[in-house]
Image 1 (tube, helix red, strand yellow):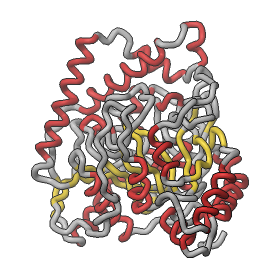
Image 2 (tube, helix red, strand yellow):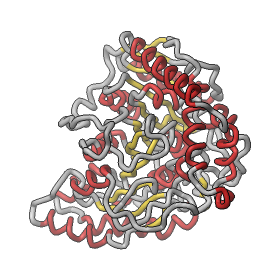
Image 3 (tube, one colour):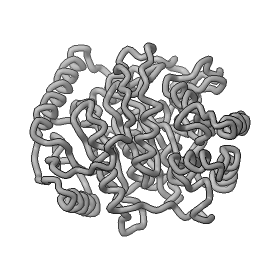
Length: 464
């Protein structure tokens, strides 16, 4: 593959070439689908492909030929995680117990993408109901990391992370209730944005409605901002949805971090694990920010134990999910999901309300912290990705030792956070860092991520 292969291009580059008549949406889609046909049997990123994609690309090509594209993503291939409704396709959620009937209408995010002319390539795999970080599920099996097929790409947006890294189109929709966009972005070497809670409408709401968001997974920061433009549109179906913000999220994205105060966070309310290469990535990012004119220092927001709070939010939601199925079919669920439900059996409403009060206390502590600091810099994940074929052991403990010790705090406090690639570990797998900001300042995390991306450009997985 050459560097000019359309499958390797960003969304911004694709639309620039469409406008110049140097490339057509049909040619771009054909390049992507050829790559999918050749590589996906080894990766398993898709739950289902869209047989109507070629027709949609042809319609886009006709619009560009007439000089009348309908939006900023006209003709750009996009994938959608299989927790999200796409009209005409079932939403299987990685489960043998989900409804196989096709969805009757598009989810708000899909409607927003189609309104901008995006071509839906297919639906990507997810862990069962989005419950865990290793990228396997009972319905579709194991999804693998394009950087090393022996390892997981992460989850629960496993297929989106793998598809982004494998260049199966430039734009991918993920969801994130405790790190499910950022963890696979970190392990797959791509950009993953968790927007402010409510920034992107969702419907139907899933098991983790009080903390979950939907966000872009892309190979470039600018593409994440471009995609956010299409996703962040008010939809009355979502009662938590924010009003429209008419800005282009790429505005001022090149303005850098000069004059900002950035806190390096070593402790998200408890002694969270991180390996030495993760610490090295943080130190390297801090040096880049300092050189770019930011004031960077270690600081502690005084968060309560986010591990304990999120454990109840996560565990109680999954217990409710499991208990919604008849007892005689629960054996068809992921065994680890059943283990989490059993561990949280007996939690009272009073217990849950106590942890909700603590979640609000954590949000208050972070809001006060951001009166002093514009951004927070911390790890995304504690370690490199585990083996794809490894059995999930003690998931309640794994949540804090292997998966989400650094990501869940931003779901609890509802502010934006982004995972950005930061070179490679000694084993050849991607490293990353995470940047967070106060609620509603999605623009700041995009600006900071862009600084790191420019300083440390990231490559494409070699799957030849």
